[in-house]
Image (cartoon, rainbow, N blue to C red):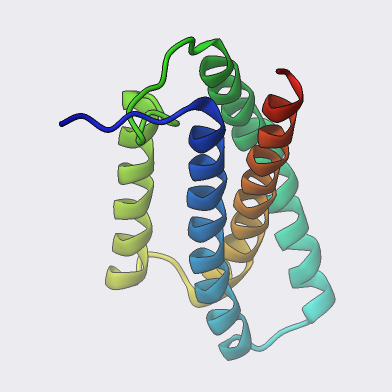
Length: 141
């Protein structure tokens, strides 16, 4: 038996995955944030720069690519087709790299706190955009 879902489910699943990934990374970022001394305002500025760079240069482009692809779908599809094969591969590599960086101590905690916090905010905002796009699909009927 095959299980197929509509476009609204796909963008909802995409939003949930992006938000869940962002929340997990934010948790790690905030835990390390508390452990690292330093000027909070400077670190907030750095995290904001990471957010802006990743959101505008990476995640917004991916959001547009995947919503266009989902929007063009005519028939129900696989529940995991909110990403294409390349998207799943990139996600797996990013997760593996993130785990390796922390596990083997390749980068200082100060970097991880700032980078993960900014990255998490960008991921969460992208997830929110997917959920907002779901509403647009509902209105297109």
